[in-house]
Length: 260
Image 1 (cartoon, rainbow, N blue to C red):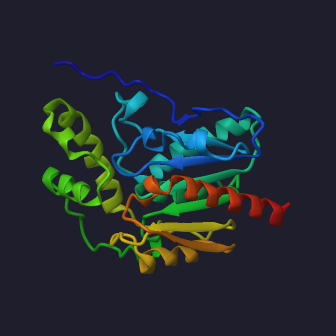
Image 2 (image 1 turned 90 degrees about the vertical axis):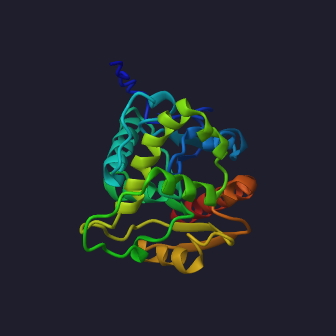
Image 3 (image 1 turned 90 degrees about the horizontal axis):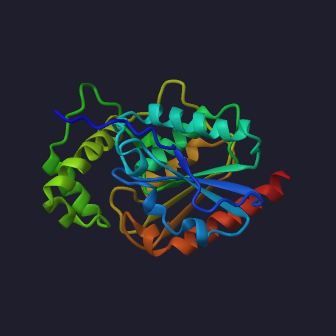
């Protein structure tokens, strides 16, 4: 029986290094997503922002590694990778941007980085932790068809990919792990509010992350909270990439002036 050999690829990718940029922006993909979702962000971002892409296990250069179905375990891995960049001498302000499942991991990463306080957190299209009700028993595992049906409803993913058996067999373990991560996530007992600005972004046509579910993100910060809706669905940021990056640039600039 053939077994895939773990590739142990990088957790962070820097498509366009900008060592002179004043800010670093670390972006976290959604469930089933990969760094390629943010393709183009590095070139489109303001020259004063360097964009790093988080690469979860089980995809792209880490295709041989088993996906990790636990938000805090993934956050710990990302936190370690970010600490390593600081150890190598990169002490620039660090902002985190997570979309959908990535918002959970970005939030948990911010909580884990108590020794390297991030400059800002941007959470996109994912309900606030305070709106996640505790579950009294084991969480039912979604079937593959339930996962694919949910994915189809969110849009963005070309579902014809799953007509190919090889792609389906390769991709489904990642989706199962990611959906398990999302379905079982709840704020930990040691969670606390963050002493940094939090911005919540969402699509106005997205029933999974509407204003009542997104605005409670204000409870995760003792600093400034900014709500920002965009017209569109769950993947509104595909059509509004430049506007989202403009918002990031403006808010990072405002925060640096406020704290400088």
